[in-house]
Image (cartoon, rainbow over all chains, first blue to last red; front, side):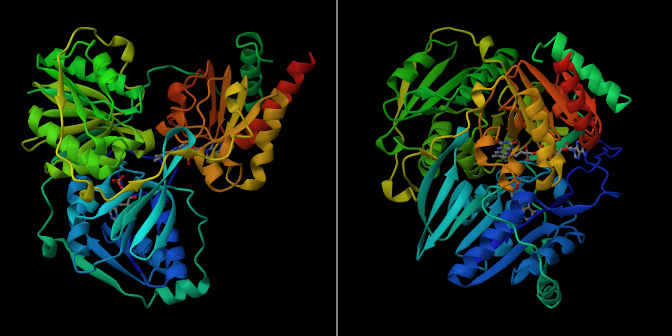
Length: 256
Length: 326
Ligand SMILES: Cc1cc2nc3c(=O)[nH]c(=O)nc-3n(C[C@H](O)[C@H](O)[C@H](O)COP(=O)(O)OP(=O)(O)OC[C@H]3O[C@@H](n4cnc5c(N)ncnc54)[C@H](O)[C@@H]3O)c2cc1C
Ligand SMILES: Nc1ncnc2c1ncn2[C@@H]1O[C@H](COP(=O)(O)O)[C@@H](O)[C@H]1O
């Protein structure tokens, strides 16, 4: 089974985000980056499927040169090779644009299965996989918590709201968007890290895919949300703050 | 210009978020002075369409077909695609549900557009909507402008619009029968199910102490568990804590976990992503403990302590014990 995993590099969680002076994106200069969390689970799922059914795991990532590091980490965990679409203008592309680049780069790969994360931590559109499936003319299912492959079809467990689930069977090839928590993530081994150095990362020029697609939805401005409700914050000495909070809980909320 | 709101239901029950989206449609429609239509999609939806017809709308579409009895991405995409074309709608609104996430992006792609998802407000500038949406898990907002020929697609986040502002009226119901081909529907769904009965019922708890990724390691969970014990509270968690197996799934609060409305909900080291907030913002009093003063959780909190939970929680336990003793 040939499995492609779409991975995106995003700022590490808990980064202090500052808006760029033009107000259109964040200042990236002093940030560190990592793999988008659900994409790590998608990669793990691909590796486990390969271990069960054989085949190949190919990572694909559109992003600037710093994305190389995240790609290397995917190779160290066990991906066989990678495609790197060298795109410096990710935040001005929209999902349709990114999906078009991914679809273009995958044209010759003909994977049986494509796994993406269900949502990116930065843009959070939650749809690149679905759009990719439509562009490639193949079936899809979203928010997946379990995958069983069986010859030409797969059976997946979709997460619904409020603790409900549903099984769905689909023909291959297909795109699945993977939910965090579907499996247990592995760490890269020293051996894996060593091997990754000799694995192929194929650089793909955006121009060779027909250039950056024009955006149909663009982010004009980003900003820190206005608070609608003013929380009463207890600051200063931890003991004093804790005492004040407990006083509120006892005399106003009356739960102590 | 005209607005079409695609409602969501499971069987004969509405998804509540649909009404909020309908309110958004009415609001924008009124401000722009353009027609507002709504659609219900499925099988045996007559009563739902009749209920929709009691709202102030220019038209209600009852989109009905045997192949829409169960939700499938392929079936719904095709049906709504035909409806959008037939209705001539320029703006199509959805509630931002898991089902909408599953098919609306595919639908938008068919029109060369993209779904503007997770919308929390709509601003009108020069007669054109600008969509405000969440970025970076709610830490930032972004204004999104759509271009091209449309139609434009947007999905509204839970709680962004108020359903109690809905206007009543009488609307004509039009039956719409899409052309669907069973062979073109690739997803074969089984019936939805719930995992085995929940051993923990968080919905009955008066006080909930909920722990998030700020706790860093499994070994630290007892620190927060001790606070829960001191307060006589149930222990709950954000999703990553359950994903990691640090606490069982049944203690998860949020859109894919339990929805709770206790007297007090204390969020410890939880950032306040929207999928967590929808599960707990009905709590009477919300307390947040977080080292990041800009964490979105403070937007819904009544009380907060900005600080390191590893210092704050032990101090709290001590004060709670003192307060209980006195
Ligand atoms: C479809 C879908 C469904 C989802 N369903 C759910 C759901 O049901 N429930 C849910 O919770 N999430 C759900 N999520 C995930 C959600 O988007 C967030 O990723 C998640 O809620 C984040 O959990 P967290 O706040 O614990 O972690 P983080 O976002 O990583 O936040 C950790 C917080 O801890 C603070 N912190 C760190 N160290 C300390 C310290 N020493 N002292 C004090 N504070 C500290 C940080 O400032 C930060 O604010 C879902 C996501 C999707 C896409
Ligand atoms: N630039 C990118 N490169 C590779 N994969 C991506 C990229 N952007 C998005 N994806 C994939 O699409 C998923 C959903 O992203 P989004 O639609 O932005 O929420 C992510 O989890 C990734 O798997």
